[in-house]
Image (cartoon, rainbow, N blue to C red; front, side, top):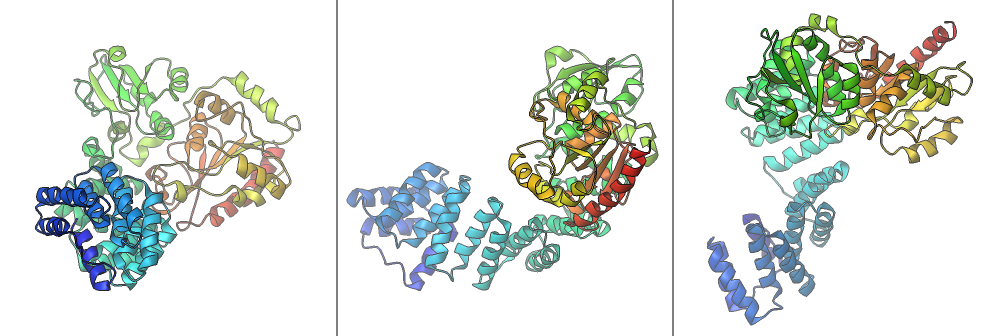
Length: 553
């Protein structure tokens, strides 16, 4: 809590903090400055017995409780201090920090904004405001706050690192590059700065330079998991698959990995002969990744071994129908159903199979459509949606992603699709999952036509029903999300809008317009991060040609 004392001392020099007249509080402050926190707390309690309305005593007690991790007690004392003395700015400052540490970012922002308003030249107030704004996802506002912190004298690598990170999130990569390099000039030992600079280079299209940075960092910190993770993804992205899978191998020990490793005593399978044995494989991450990696299950089933496949409940109906020779069981987020699995010869996560089954670009020649659906259900949906008895094609569209790490980079706005829908004589079906009502209601008057939406199908609850809906389409056009994985695995024609930079999933690789995972997929790429106009224009052009071929069939 030394920064609280610095803030207090600066305020005293600033002329806004009076020396306390409570002797016990003076004693408590002395103990605190000497880092005898237990004595400080005892003296502060006596000060409050002497005067329960002593704002500065409540302020110090709030700091002490915060230091001990009791944020509720800290909040109570700090709010009391502010209520007793609205000019006690350091209490408001520390209250903001407590709110921030508890994840109450809106309240933290309110506190820090009040401090910055009262004392606009204090760099610490702007710095803390920037952090709270960053945590709230308000990147543009956080950039302004960090810039004010620097303007009013905040130095050190931390503020430049935070500013650079905010620039990345806001898509201002040239500014991010400059800020992060300045942070490294101030302190070259802070590993996250190197990682974020490498991420910036990825977003600037300099993947080879980013890989060099990851290697440089890993030479000094070989177990730094964030760098290992980004390095592995970068190698996979460049189709250096064997090296990428090798770098990815220790991921079960990384804190960001949710995995089912260690729940079975069976040895881990790495491609050796397992004929006449039994293999447990499990899926990981979201449904899109389950479907992508599921394209390797037919390879496993061809190994003459009994296979048990643990997957999410959303994907289980699809996999059960698609892999009749495989025993499909349902896993929770990471927990495997041990009673249903029983004893097996070997185990592996489905992702890890890539090291054995997809170690070269040529190994993808086995990839093909594999998801099975019921033809009659698809035909019923086609009849439901078609407005002209099949004389116009059904084109499904999806325009955003709900990725945990790259929603903004992978998403367009529905209004960006207006020209495509206006000029194409087709029936367009909304395949976008999540709440789309507001976007659709604004969009229809803009383009003068209906975007068909089926309230009976909810992809977030009924993936099997959604797969049949996708299967009813003549063409699917979408940003990189679960929709394109479903379409590709069904063998439907699908055009995928691929972001550049760190929003680009590794499995779309670089520069390709084809997709090795799904032969029916065509890729439309951003030329630079944030530019959706170029791939949407290419889609618009190619769609007019596609319509001519469709009409002539």
